[in-house]
Length: 367
Image (cartoon, rainbow, N blue to C red; front, side, top):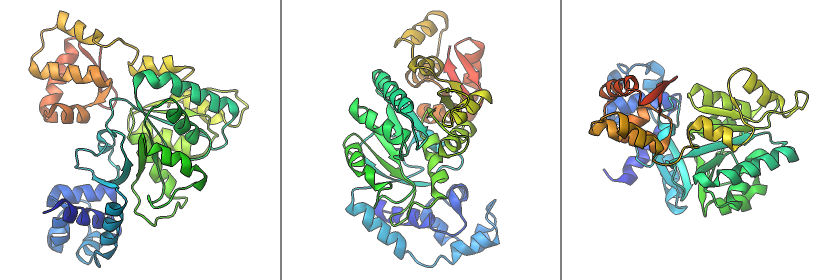
């Protein structure tokens, strides 16, 4: 099967009424590939957990592939990458989120699996203080050569993208519509510059308009694609808090910039801190300390070599953690190519040996 024909079925899989990303992954696990799902008999589909009568009928009676063929032509014409969740170029951090999109559309040149990725979100009605803090933070983050992710919205989002461009950091915008348009259109010039060093991502097909319900769906990508989410100014409700809560559900680090208790756009950040859903962020040093990015290269590696004799598999794990910082067991499994069952035992031994710490959510970091 060619990549093009396989992609046709993968696109069509996202169109099956009622299936969604979680069930789509179950179908792939049982059937092997997207094409085989459409060829599977209804009685066999009914044996798959979570696939009842309605979904089995939706799959077996799928009308046609005309829309999928149209989308395939669109992405080929516009130099867009369609990344299926099993592809190596698909963002590895996002892959381990249960509800991550099974297929994303990406236009750009940034490495979505960069060593360090940070999402910056906040109020659309950002104050001058918030925008100044955002730009200063991005400027200080340049030493880490990380990828900046946001949602290309007004306020803090666009400030994060502009600051990344200014300080020559790659930056990616996650959209709540197809890649055939841009909302808000006023940010088109910035989006064009982002394609030179960064890119645009969406899990929506072309011709999808930016409906209200699309934005929370977009936010799960913003939260899942990064190591940490930073909230700079947020009211008591809104997209920034939704993104922060999703990041929490993924066991990702969340940071919030505090503000005056009676400021409208500090209430959300203060609440995140007060309810222990975010660490307080006053400067880049807070981020570096909690993420373990402030240490000099080689410092941890030297310590483990001095006091603990490591075998080849253990060395591989510690080297990856030294390069990437905190990682969950699924990501370590992918990076080391070790099955999670065997990996769990090795990680436990390293923990007992005082080489690494075990954190909530099966996340590990070097001591």
